[in-house]
Length: 85
Image (cartoon, rainbow, N blue to C red):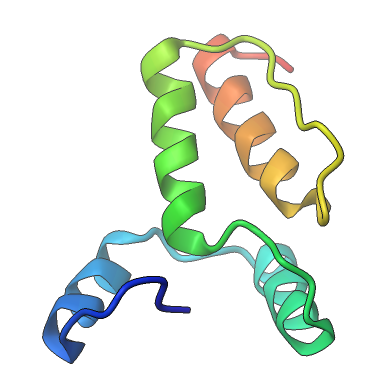
C-alpha cells in the first residue's frame, strides 16, 4: 500500500528493501487487506523492527493491536536482540 505518492521506480526500490515475509505474516496481510483491517504494513513494520534492534529492546508492548502481526514482528526482533522473549 502506498501512503505517499512516489514513482513506480522508487516504490519498487523500497519494496526490494523489505525482507521477504514468512507465509504466516503474508497470509495475515492478505486477510487484513481483504477484510479492511488497518495493520502496520511491511515498510512500517521494517522500520519498527529496526527501532527495536537499535534500542536493544528485551521486551515489547503491543497495546490493542488490530492484528497480532505487528506484535509478532516486534517480538521476533526483541528475541533476536536478547536471545529470548
